[in-house]
Length: 232
Image (tube, rainbow, N blue to C red; front, side, top):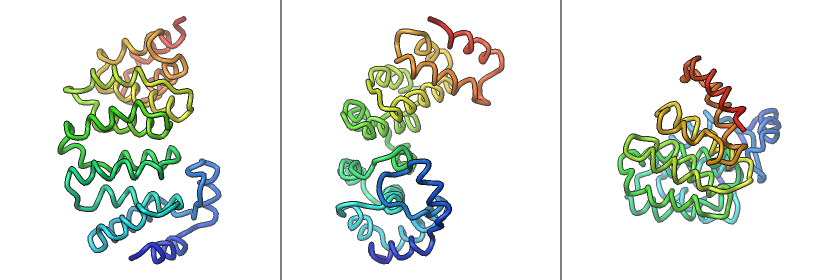
């Protein structure tokens, strides 16, 4: 399959009503066909064993991509056979297509191979936290949240992301999400960050709200968090 054939397939799978729904969610500021995520997942899995690198490279070197093409690109990145060094080398070239919360979180979640060699990729995602582009920052935060809130690295991750500065809505929401996820994994290490003075107040309060909404947090802790949320 080449890009032309991929676009034809996406057009066949597109649902106008779902496209309207996605546009409201602001999944992309580019072209959106309206293909549901399960269909994109099946398509990527069909392509990966037979097409491997060629379609991936064709998409990667395109001037612009639709939302669905970007999702296929990111899913192929997670599925195709590459060396650790090749993956790391391709990552910067993938960033220009990361233009929304949806593309961002797709790329972060597809890199499941990070779990096999966390130390190798760790410096790269830490470095993303210092980028000016908001979705580079969000990719760093979300990837660290997914793969590095582990006993060996959780304290360092919490400390590093506490220094991320941004007034971009989706960066702040990623930070809140990360601290809420960390609280569910290690309450004692995370709780100090939820007191006033360390995080931006919007991030702090949103992180607490996410904890309160979580089924992984006890009712007793939720009561304490509600009090902490009001702390001056």
